[in-house]
Length: 368
Image 1: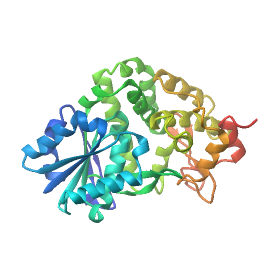
Image 2 (image 1 turned 135 degrees about the vertical axis):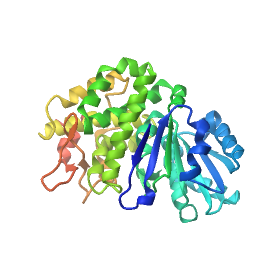
Image 3 (image 1 turned 180 degrees about the vertical axis):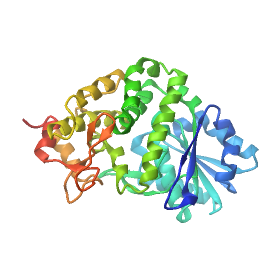
Image 4 (image 1 turned 90 degrees about the vertical axis):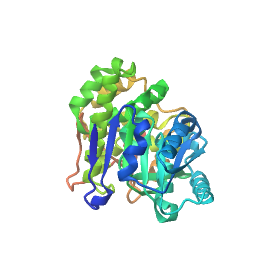
């Protein structure tokens, strides 16, 4: 299956997302037209690099290209300016030029870091996203957001840089640990909440088959989530409007990641964030009653957490939210669902809403 992501501001920046099985072996053929280059820097982490890095690099070399595998230590805590600088320096040391391209081979961290390297190396070279986690396949590899974390918060340094191609090989999902599969399903559930009630119902109904990695259902999850994400980013390339709905759950999630550091993965933080934000929306009369309970049941079915990490206190979380890049005039803003499958929109057309800090603290469990 191929999903087209048209970029209306620049048709040359439009790209395809290929979804299928055995696509890693076909990578040289797939990138030949959309991302031709004299040399390829295959950027990965220490885990994925061992699993797939050598085979991808060998396939590129066998097809006549120069390719080098450059890895960095796995883990969100390595999504830093230092990692970006090290990879950029290593590319310079290998004499990559402006006729080179980057292959981002890995999960969300790899995709974000490698994309940021591509966006900035010699003022920008093309790149291809090859996501190897469910979360990266259905979310972070699509849309052109790249970047690294800073001590003040997550994704505060970065650039919009669209990939030339996204290649989602479903076969690699077999190597995922159960916790990684669950993390990806948090984003899939989010897609159902923000855009498709029937999809959410499917995920509710088929949770046992999905967690058992039924091939047909996993393929349906990837295809539907990719289509939803692609449709949203097509309408709003640089997050000036409707793309904000993709941030449902993420205002709280990014605060959790900033405060609790690495006690929770991104998917786990999003799960808790969705539940808290849905409760907040209900308390403000924006979200239909019962929405949060329904989200909670779905999260539980996918073995996702419902409680904040112990290190994440309400006061610290609120302080982190004030520094979130989505805040405006120091006011914390949220993307609220009206109900499963539809998001709230303010009278002025905005897709995010402010909330009183007392209500936020109460939703976080820190107030009466």
